[in-house]
Length: 265
Length: 265
Image 1 (cartoon, one colour):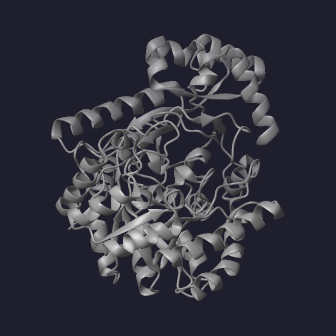
Image 2 (cartoon, rainbow over the protein chains, first blue to last red):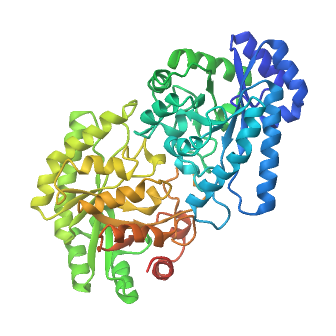
Image 3 (cartoon, rainbow over the protein chains, first blue to last red):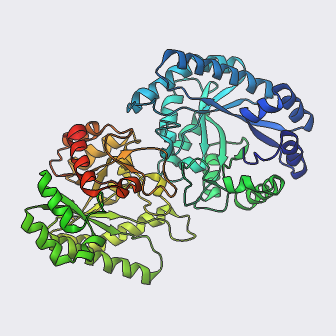
């Protein structure tokens, strides 16, 4: 998604040329290029698929919406398995229209995971609850902190449910380093993602994720926390940024690789 | 600030007509109308001044900037005393340009309060640290949760430093109810403010505070928490909203009073 202006073959060849060993994929571009075709393309290129984004949206109250969400998540788990990644990132969902019940919404997430966790594990896929920045609490994700994510994840075995640690969402939180240690001790850091915090936030705030090095977050500090917690997996850079998307995708991919080396390697 | 399209006399007469017993004032419109003139106007109208907004911006590293901030806060304390309010709300400040050190910025806030707290108390004014929503952490306030605000406030006597409980900033936080209880037990809830969470957030996110009843927050739930914590002080409605500001100020003031009765009284 960082370089969504690139086609799937451009993305894959770009990663290979730059020596980037793995790539996190999103379901929509995978579906567009074709699931089997994408799986073959990345496999033939020797690229690892680090994660698939995204499952989730578990907070609907309406039974039909809820059943549809569960079915779609089973499909996402199947897609992850086909792509050869062991991790499906979850954006858990916001408040249903008109609801003010954060607690109830969080409980419906746990309910959904009790159905999906065993299915995921039986397919070799781990679910990774991503706490989203509190500014997304009403519309995208009622799980706003790493501690809240762990409170839910720890109801399940770690090979079923863990967490996504994303600097952009948690950098402001002085309790997050302790939560990272807790997640690591339980083997629940299923992926680690980087983006920088830049201002002003754009209207709607979704596409405000900044290139690493451009903002307020000390990437090495957070890398230090996940490493101290025992994490040895891939580190993903995930940017959503209209300005970056408007430019050349190859240039953005190389800039991202350079910034990663400069600020996080 | 909720009805910033009204002049000071319009605001005061509007409150009196609607039976609103007190008003929180901001320094800029007070300075514009004149400090002594404002104090006389509200006193003669029999209106309480619930709080003065705002002091703060304590995070500068540069000694000259720091000294200027302290001097300005002493002036704000004097203004609060002249207006007859016992509470100065603090927006503590963001990260200095180029800094990524949240911890250091928070410590500089505590340093500033050690100088200002005694001065405030000797003038009958309490300082009320306002945790701002984490989306303001880099540019306005590195104090993002009520627990962080209390960690700082509790270094000082409660008649010097307490907190502002504002639904807009803390509604997403499942640890905030416990923090409210902690604040109440220490006599540190110095004011309670309402605004609703509405989406989409506007560019820059500052003017996104929604009219109560329009969004995701259960006002009575939060009022219940502060009341259970022993708070018996005034409840302020504080909206920043370009759309509301563009309309008629008197209509907005009566709408706000109606919404308060409907959702919080």
